[in-house]
Structures are given as structure tokens and as C-alpha cells.
Amino acid sequence: MKYEKTFFAPEIRWGFTIQEMMKRCWAANLDVLEVFKDICSRYDLRYYAAYGTLLGALRHNGFIPWD
Image (cartoon, rainbow, N blue to C red; front, top):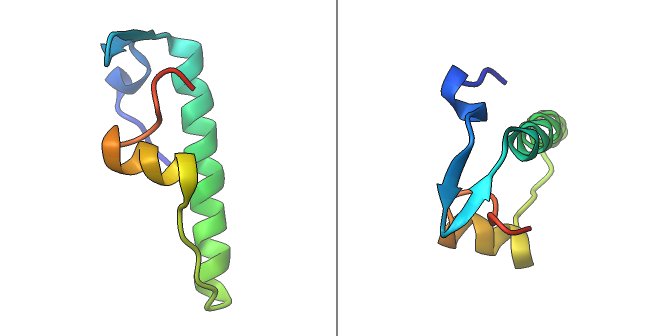
């Protein structure tokens, strides 16, 4: 995936400071998810988010800041 230059800049979300290194971990997770999506698409496999992943996606529009 391609990320904007500002993606890795530190920021505050929900009162928590998100450092560059954490954002790099998030980017690695997103890259793995992209490969997973491609594999599922290629073999017509269904996947879904659940539990903390689903909670973060819906409530925080991404990763839960303190996780």
C-alpha cells in the first residue's frame, strides 16, 4: 500500500499520543491485510472482522489507539 507522508506523523487520538513507530506497525498490519484480501478474493473465500478488530474499525475508524 502507499501511504501519505503525513500518515506516519505523531498525533493524538482519543487522548492518546500515537508515535511514528506504532503507525509503522499499523502500516505493516494493513499491508498483510491487503495480501490476505487478495488471496481470499482469488479463491472466493469470505472473511470478516470480529471482536476488537471490528470494534476498532467501527468505533475508532481504524486501530484502537491504546492497543
